Structures are given as C-alpha cells and as structure tokens.
Length: 349
Image (cartoon, rainbow, N blue to C red; front, side):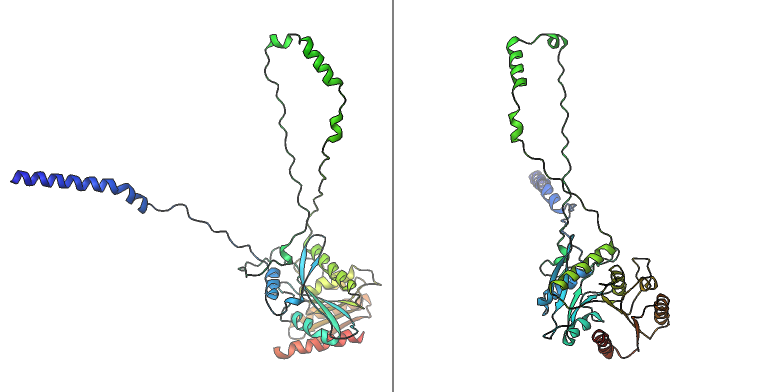
C-alpha cells in the first residue's frame, strides 16, 4: 500500500511539473516588458500669429478677417470699414513684438473706434521675430493665412546616371573581325538620319530658388501688401500707426518712401527694437514726413527717450514733428484718452 501511494505521488508530481513547464512560454510572453512604445505625432508648434487668427476665426469678428499676400507668403489682417459715407482714409496698424492684430492695448481699441471717426482700419498680423516663436498648444480651427507658404518649391536633385562599364572581353574575341553582315548593319545604323530627336521630350524648366527674406524684409513686404489693399479701395489717405516695436517699423517704412508720397506716421509708446540697430533718432532725422509721437509720462526712462526723439527732430529741422505726452491715468480711461488724442491729430491735418 505504501508503495502504491509513493507511485501515485510521483506520477502526480511529474504531471504537475510538466504542466508548469508547458505554460511557461505563454506566461513569459505576457509578463515580458514592452520595449517598443507607441509614438503619437506631435501637434505642430503654432506661432502667436496663427493662434490670434484662429481665435478671430472662431469668434464673432470672423467676417473682419482677411488674407493679404506678398510674393512669398500669405498673412492675416483685420479690416473694418469707416462708418461714414465719405471716409477720410485708411489707417494701417502695426502691433508690437509679442502682440496680435487685436491687442487689447492701443491696437484693438483704436482699430474698433477709429471707424466711428471716419477712418478705415487695417490691422496687420506682423511676423514673429525668429527667436520668439510661441510654443502653445493648437486650437481647433481651419488653416489660416500664416500656414500657407507660396514660395516656389526647391528643384529636384538631378538624377545621377551610372556610367556604362564595358564588360571584360577576352583579347582573342576583341581582335577578331566582325562578320560582314554585322558590319553592314552597323553602317546602316550610323548613316540613318536622326528623326527621333524631333520627338524628344523638352527639358523641364529650371525653377529658380529665391533666397530667404530677412525679418525686416518680411515686415516691409507685409506693409507693401497693406498699401496695395488700401489703393485698391481708393483710400483718400493712407496712414501708418505703430505701437511699441511696431512704431519702429512704421517709421522706418515711411523713411524709405519718396518724400512727396511718404505717409503720415503715428508712434504710440515707441519701444526700442531688438532686431535692428537703427535708432529712432536716426530715422527721425532721415527726411521723415509728418510724425505724431505719443508717449506716456509715467516713467523716467520713457521720458528721457522721448526727449531724445524731440531733440533729433529739432536738429533735423522738422516742422511737422508733433510730440504728445499722455498723463498716466486709470487703465479704464487710458484707451479712451489715447483714442481722442489720435483722432484729434488725424482729423487736424
């Protein structure tokens, strides 16, 4: 009886071990750590311009959003028509660095209020500086102008043709004379007129790759497109108004135009531009046309910079340079005060 029990226990142990080893590979597959992680595509990094345009596209002001084009790219702008039968003209607004074309300080309030004073407004979405791209999650909206590049594509690389390599021919066969029939066929092929050249495919046109524009060149092309839009509307007068760094680009653009056709320029709280080395003083003294320089008298540095610009206008003998100091008031009244002073200067000329 004891022997039978031992035999039964041995058989049971063997069966248990056999089943354990038989299931070990399956368990090993389940418990094996996963090394290949599934990678999800990252959303495209959107700039401040794209996000601002998409926000307008999804809002109540979507009908104000227009697309302007340069020879290289498309960009977004906001247009509001003057609420008057005979508008005075069109004001192009340039926001500062890090600001959008509907910025709540200066740009947004002016573009919304100036139409009541008889002026069209066209607020531009200027390109972001090369080192100031925004890393902000995408919002759900249709593509906007800043995402559509119209530069010509780069030409395809030429296909390298492999040189024909002569096969090794034994010396004996190479020295042998060709049969007469083969020689006659060769002569016929050589003497046959080349009619196939008439049906040869024309060479593909060479696409010239344009050099990339610098940041100042891009801004200048944006303002050119805005002027073209204003001329298509037959605006009686075109004025450039810049806020912070936008004031620098407005002033620089005006100095590059012929004096007889240079637009009036309004500078709102001018701020030093980090992308170029020209100062406001040099631009003011470069035969600049009518300028209105609005600044806030709440900071010593701001007041000192305004004094330097005023002295530069006196040295250049500019008779149409007007500097307007705005007192520091409550934020709720600041934008209304700025609008009234800008409207007074626009309608006074």
